[in-house]
Length: 218
Image (cartoon, rainbow, N blue to C red; front, top):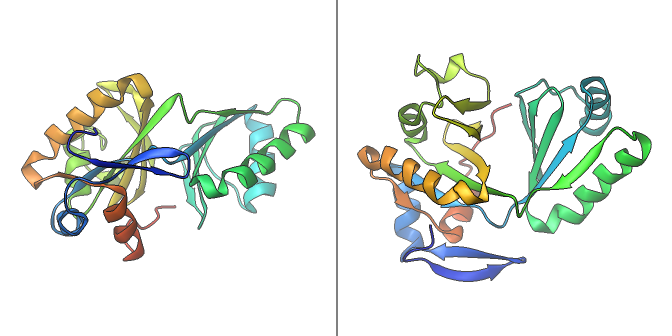
């Protein structure tokens, strides 16, 4: 994952700034597809009985969020993995405020539990023009191969330990145990060869997002 990368600290994490040329990596995403590690993300998991979680979500987000549904805000991505689990992803600059909001709810609802999974999990992004083709090759869309037949949050039959978060038509994030990240990276890279997949560093990823790419899927 870090082979050939220019590494640098970024808000408490070590990130790959680029793999040689941020401009070339951006072009690779616009014309093909890229793969990027997201070690800078803070990953928080909230667990609660289904009715409690729904009550909290209505108040916290001002709208319901169905199981296996996604809600992208400007600062936090909210992912309801199933009836009883909610995952929140954010940049470190927003992490303290997010923790405070969630811990406030644990004081109101004793059955709620918040865990920081940043060290336990790894996040790998697939982004660019041919994201859908790579996800189809990986089996994220199931036997039909049609993204419209699966919810925004799904798993593949051959890798049930990885959760796929389909944040938009051109952007998806895979959450997996940190110990499994290198193997998942290799599988994604193999699936992306037909679409000229390139490794993407943080600089190109930020530029891609500022272009209005990586749109949200609600």
